[in-house]
Length: 449
Ligand SMILES: NC(=O)c1ccc[n+]([C@@H]2O[C@H](COP(=O)([O-])OP(=O)(O)OC[C@H]3O[C@@H](n4cnc5c(N)ncnc54)[C@H](OP(=O)(O)O)[C@@H]3O)[C@@H](O)[C@H]2O)c1
Image 1 (tube, rainbow, N blue to C red):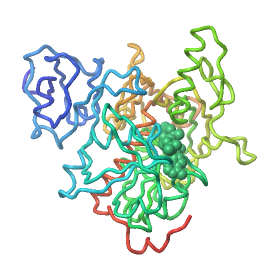
Image 2 (tube, helix red, strand yellow):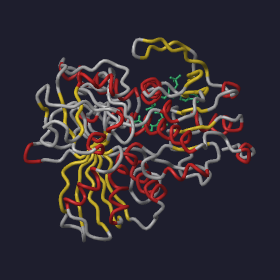
Image 3 (cartoon, protein in one colour):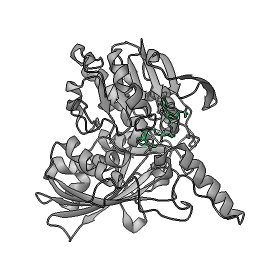
């Protein structure tokens, strides 16, 4: 048993691999992985038929030399919106390890559902921060993971001296991005925007770092994070597209309330308590109660297609990210009474055939993806298992007889992390890695919405 493969025990996780937080599993649990890729894509929170938990003493320790690059593996439970999370392993090189010692003045704009996770993840990933400034509509103090953070009022002058700002304010004309986005760029601050306002702007790269990092090279100071459902779908679709070419996609989503923001999280919680206490639920955020219900509308209907804005975002953004407008995409986006993590049933037609085994292999080798697929043993992705982890899980991989070269799959991913805050931070990390972490001088004159 010993010697072959890549072993990791809870005991050595903090020492052999750069972990900073205590592990929550009992000491002595050991995992064996046949390749570094399998190690990267594995979640340590549960035993699965793929990854056996071996007896203590069977292992050799994982060292940096045994892996193709260092990884962050240790984390603690995330409080807040991850009620079912039993742990995970954020995977990826830390920014501190990638950059050349430079530290950045960083802003987070908006401190709602996404902004809070942004602050949490910046801390966890050891992003090289000189000073962190948090801006929102009004000044106050917030507590994140027990630590107080000062929130200042967002003004144009607040961006003077900032190197990078992560925007997680609301969308639209009164939102943070439209009000301050290009203004911040004009003041020399790189903006990474979570909202929809500039995603289709030709000046703005729309980036999932595992999929189209090269788009960052032409940025004009403002980079957009795709919509959460698009990012989570992209993590599975892009590797399949690279392998066999996508021609058609039908995507049906099961989206958590955290995707609407902090008010919706409170609303689901309140409605559950109302139900338990025999009171009629009051709906304010959504048109109907979300507790014990599903709502087949996310966003408004803005044209005569009958599709909602969320459904149209998935179409347009997929075309822009993959650089292929010929892919035909449709689907239905549905809000479900889940606190966190979006799930999606994806039905795809490929340009050339790919067996289920080949698809599994492609997805298992994809960065940021974990294959969780053994239906006979009830192993498949769920929102609870993916809440509070970096990876997007993919399962239920099977032929889809509806399509020529058809495949069906089911994905789940944390909409606040990979669908928003984590992807935004990974964009910044990639910009640092590529050496494109400043506003180009030509972009400053392009201010304005
Ligand atoms: N939730 C998700 O899963 C998800 C995923 C992808 C993208 N996004 C996008 O991320 C953004 C944030 O979403 P969220 O869910 O975190 O929303 P949220 O919980 O409603 O929080 C919004 C935050 O934005 C701040 N804000 C609004 N207008 C502002 C302005 N003009 N100037 C400064 N701050 C302003 C608010 O400040 P106050 O606290 O002072 O009111 C609040 O802190 C949205 O654009 C959303 O579409 C969200």
